[in-house]
Structure formats: C-alpha cells, structure tokens
Image (cartoon, rainbow, N blue to C red; front, side):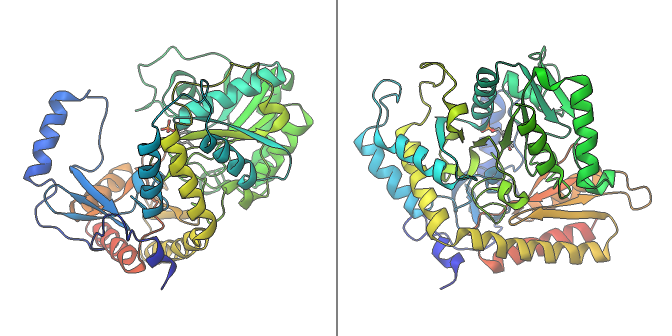
Length: 450
Ligand SMILES: *Cc1c(COP(=O)(O)O)cnc(C)c1O
C-alpha cells in the first residue's frame, strides 16, 4: 500500500478517485444553486469553480450533478490531509457529541491545551514556546501584531511587496494587492510600512542583495527604534508562490534579532507539511520569533494559532488575547487528528513526492513552451508563472484562459500573483499519483489550446 492509499478516505466518503464529467460545468443543479447564491449572497463573495459541491475526498470534489473534479487547490491549501479524512471525521464526531462550546476563556478544556502543546513542539526552534488559538488566519496575524507591539512597546510593522495576510482591517493594510483585497475598503490602520521582497525571477538579486535593499529601506524609512515587527510569508501564497533567494530570510531574521524587532513568519498557507517540511521556515534554516498558522491545521475546520517565544507570547496582560470561539473544541479535536496524520502517516514525504511530480511535469512543459516563464515552489506548493516570451511581461489573460479551460474540463486550479499570471498547485496530499498526472495532462492540453 502506498502512502497515497493510506490518505484516501476509507471511513468517510469512499469516492471513486476519477475525473468524471456527466454535464457541462456548471450542470443544471449547480446552476440552480449559483442562481440562488446570486440573489442571496453578497456580490463581494466570489467563487472560482462554478459548481455546487456535495462531497470531497482523496483527490476529488463531486458536484450536485454527479461531476467529479480533480482537486489541485485543496480549498486554498486547507485540506492538506485530504477532505473528510477519516481520523478528522471520527475526532469531530466524538467531540461534537460531548460538547460543542464552553468558551475557553470561561471554562477551559483539554483539547485546546493539547493543540497548544503540539504546536509548541512541532514549530521550528527548541526554545520555550507558548500558543494562543483563534478562528482564521487573519485573526492570527492581527494577534501576532498585537503581541509584538505589547512586547516591544513599539508600533510600526513592516510587511512586504506581494504579501498577503488577510481581509480584516489590519491585515488588509498588511496585504499588498489593491484589487480585489483593498480597493475602496480604506482608510487603513497606520504604522504599516512595505519593504521590497526577494523575487529571483523578476529582480535577479541574490538573497544578500535583496535583504540589504529591504533592510536599508526599513532603517531609513521606519527606523528600528519604532519597529515592533517584520511579518513575512516564507514562501508567499496569494502573491505568487514566490520563493525568496537563499540567504534573504536568514539576513532579515538576524537583523530583527539585533534590533529588538519581532520576526513573524506567516505560515498560514505554507505550514503543515505543505512544502515538504512541517513548516516552510525549516527550508530556509530560520527560527521565527512568532509563527502564525491556520489553513491546513485542522483538516478543514476553522482554527488558527499564534505560536512563539514564551517571553513574547506572555507579554500581554490577562484578558488581552482571546475571542468567543477561538480554539473551539470541535476544531481542536480536528486539529489533534490532523496533526496526528501530519506526524505519523507519511504526509511530509508524500508532499515531497507530489512536489517532484509537479516540478518535473511543469518544467517539461516549460521546456517546450516559452510562455511558462518560471516554475517554482517547495514540496506540494508549486506554481507556474506565465509571461509574454518576447517581453517577459506577465500574461494574466493567458493564465485566466488556461485556468478556466482546466475547470471546464474537470480540474480545479487556482490562480494567484500580484499580476494574476500564476497558476498555483496545492493538491491534497491524499491525491493518488494517476489522478495528479491526469490533472496535469489537462493543464498541458489547456495550455496547448491557447
Ligand atoms: C489565507 C491567508 C491568510 C488569511 O487567512 P484567513 O483564514 O483567510 O483569514 C493570512 N496569511 C496567509 C499567508 C494566507 O495565505
């Protein structure tokens, strides 16, 4: 039995692991739901794949018309262990029948503490750590900033070009891209500054050069005396799966240490086995002061965390951190089951295997098609950046057309990137090899046809 077999749901929905189209996408039942959505749900809440999802597991999402789509997105890097993973389902069912909520700030319970212990153990670094739990990635980022400000007694925060940190007021301000995330939603909170990233495909700088450029800007335009925190995604997610050049992140961490600045790694998208290590920070040899997590943490249930140096995490007065639902017991039960899978079921190795397939297939495509400008990523977090071969300019139109053609052919792919010219591949790690290859065949045909 391969690792993929152990990850395919056996106790949950035993879905045939196949791409199956029985109607056009969307089919009539899906269209019916999309019509209801259009009249009942706020227009600002968009969707990428025009289906009504009714089941998902292994490497597929099934819709109301009976179509079975290959899932190369994991609901944005969330169902890393696989959708409806049997261990997650069992843990949730058991917990939901015991109690659904007490509010951890009112009556604490064991699963929250166990999730904190697990996060303190599996995040990078062997220093004393503590954690606090929240509901979403944005909420974790907001709290990491609160904690860093309280600890340093300073206010400024530096985020990076192409960065994405969420859609709440503070995290929108930290996020780089105006459309669709920020446009018209200001004013934004103050004391947020933006530094240039290392983007090897576009800036041609070494990690040391890019770090020098960023640090010089920070020193001149913000000043370490005013700076509470630097927040960065070790590999950017929405920004285009940008992998910084070697040495960039370690130089930033070193500068933060020397200047009493809290280094926050936002691993909401890159965390939990996705990149072929438990956290992407490990791939760059860095130990963040604080790390924010969410997405893959609980097999699809909403949970998020800030984990970091105990002395920083303890800076807040009692009652300064929390929230009604933060660390909900059902979500914590799911997280404990998912973390068990991450640690014991070969998921990290599987991320590397999937990554090898993605990179070899995409670099083969690149060799025959100069419009594939760059293939990059780590583990099962891989992207292709599409360009005009003559100018190197981003080609968002091609990217959108290829993505739409894939979806119409029953393969869920997501785009990203500041210029909208990146297709990102984030398959659930329960994806069987054959299905992954079939999905990539569809991507190749879609590209060839455009
Ligand atoms: C998705 C994401 C967030 C926001 O998480 P939500 O759960 O959507 O609030 C923050 N940071 C990164 C890096 C993300 O990818």
